[in-house]
Amino acid sequence: MNIFEKDGEIATRNLSPGIRVYDERLIQYGDEEYRIWNPRRSKLAAALLNGLEGLDLKNDSKVLYLGASTGTTVSHISDICDEGLIYAVEFSPVSMKKLVRLSQKRNNIIPLLADATKPKYYLNKVEKVDLVYCDVAQEKQSELFMDNMGLFLKEEGQGIITIKARSIDVIQKPKKIFKDEAKKIKENGYSILEKIKLEPYEKDHMAFLVEKSF
Image (cartoon, rainbow, N blue to C red):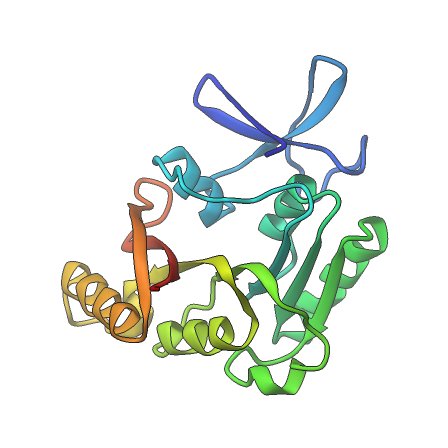
């Protein structure tokens, strides 16, 4: 992957040298420019810094990103998959405006204004992908994640979901919520490869790396 880690920070090789996406620091590493990946702005960066090891992202990987927002994490995946494609699904028209502007500078991002709970509406716009990434904070986040994986994930692909416990239930303890969500995922034919807590960057969050059970 086009990532390096040094002194407790991670960075991705900048696909658009000289251009920042969210006021991140740009640094020179060898002959290349890299963008510091802020774990307080990106749950995937938090997961990687907290020990996520099995993520299989290649330079030509295709990714379906659910809950793309304005494109902070999407932009770093764009750096990593510089010869691939990122289908970036976002429901908010306000966020989509920024995401479209980002895609105009990065040809490997395809913004889709759509509801991730209704994947059949973009079925004819998204091909089979190597990774489904879900960052949609709502009560049924695991269900929409699995619905999208069932439609779009390649047989040998992976999925990542970042679960926000308080979006599912504000009364139950996060530990029980994570256990219940993991059970749902396993019962629907997926194996959980890694579970990564996102503290201290995100409170009451956990990332699951999953694949299809065979």
